Length: 175
Image (cartoon, rainbow, N blue to C red; front, side, top):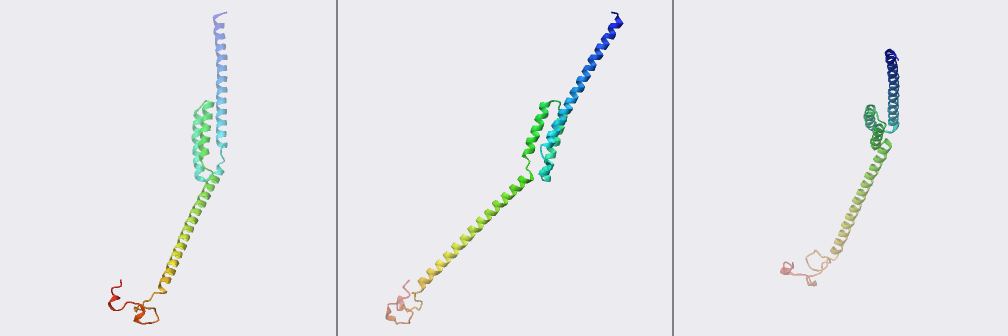
């Protein structure tokens, strides 16, 4: 074989190798693009933003954007999966409107029960105070019923000094 034929054969072999390599690189790039697209789709389908309030939607969107940026930078399937899994875990911690509503209702019910308990305790204390006041008034009326304030030491019928009461200076020394 002549030198010229050897050069042509070498060039042909190099062209075939280059074409094969270019095909492999193209195929590899397509695989990476497909992997990224699947990861992005999984990420966006993981939650329905309509289930969240505006503030929580903003939080979910930020998590998704951060994950999408990281996915665009990776060429490894395992890394992309880890990024998606981490983003899903973060999004799962964000509460839906339904969850927040349930928590708000539970908190309102707890507050209502606490207020009701306080109101009942105040009512009980008021009733006890009224009962004590009534008992004190009844006890006072029991003591004053037979007590003579007339100063003659007898009963209140206006009897005399011989009824056993204190007379004269003895009344001053009685206490």
